[in-house]
Amino acid sequence: MILAYSLFVIGFIILIKSADWLVDGASSIAKRYAIPELVIGLTIVSFGTSMPELIVNVLASLNGSSELAIGNIFGSNIANILLILGASALVKPLPIQRSIYYTEIPISLVATFMVGFLANANLFGRSEGLAISRIDGLFLLLFFGLFMTYIYVVSKDKKEELMDTSGESSMEMMSMAKSLVLIAVGLAGLFIGGKWIVDGAIVIATSFGLSESFIGLTIIAVGTSLPELVTSVMAAKKGKADMAIGNVIGSNIFNIFWILGLSASIKSLPFNELNNDDILMLIFSNTVLIFAVINGKKPAVSRFEGMVFVIIYFSYITYLVMRG
Image 1: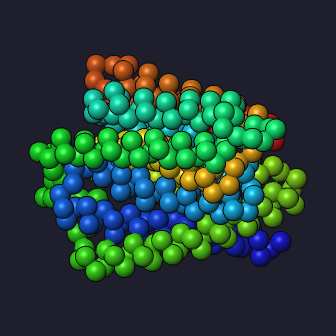
Image 2: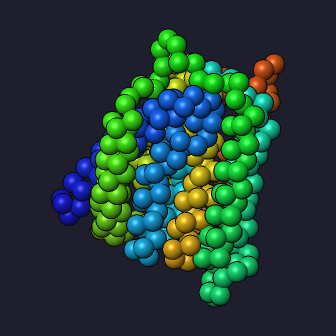
């Protein structure tokens, strides 16, 4: 039991540090080619900070721990909006570009509705109960491909919005060799850390009589969201709101279309009706974000709204504890 706790904690440390190395290496390469910050936030940084969720989910799917996999995605997305954007806005108000609240946030909301519909309608599954089937997973991956095509078009349209390489920057320009080494080491560490977390979480949940869904929605969701939290708070502190917002919204879209899609493609994920509450909470979180953006003279998430986000998040955690 002590070994399970140790692997669980050490796994998180390795996971977070490995994600940090991966983001540093990938962002340095992006900076070398002068890619706009919004595009970096929506792609490279989002992909890098979503790697913990990816590794945890793939391993959980292979282990047949569907509740852990689904709970991790929903919990991470809720934490991304309410906890991470809220904390980032408390550090510094976050101005939001028109394209984000007209396109990316609605895409994130549509992704949530889509996974909720697929899980409950069970259109393509052959199982008796509800599930996110393999065909559902491929369907989600198709939309991930469409989203990446959209990002490619956006990056082409924003050629003039190149990164400002002068002054203080949240990303270090490194040699190509060092960048590639950090990416390789980061990926290896993510796999090891993710495996230890999944193994430890299953042992802990079993010993305390807790559901895998609860562990996934709380401890693992927050733990795998730490890279997003650190990245977005530091980006907000340095006045890089585009990267902070793009990181969170991009991660949420990645989590549903890419990670949940890939997990379900590997193995059909049985769906517990209780998780519909979490889908509703995620829809509510996106709606609150949209309201916060359009409320006021300029599109932004203010410090007050950030505080409200954080309060809502901890109220939700209290509900999960009561739900068990």
